[in-house]
Image (cartoon, rainbow, N blue to C red; front, top):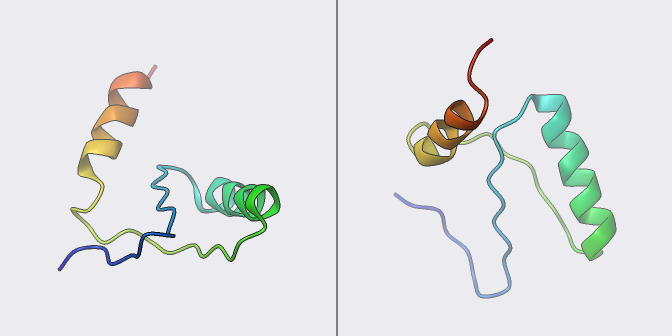
Length: 60
């Protein structure tokens, strides 16, 4: 099962805390004046994004 969207959908995957994700959602809504929804990822859908984040932000 994949992500379903149409040609007018902007799909934004972010790796963030729930608070930061809500802030980003609000910003996108303000900037685009479009309906924006925030959902949790299904495990496995954004593994590459999570790996990229871990590489760019190694633990101290």
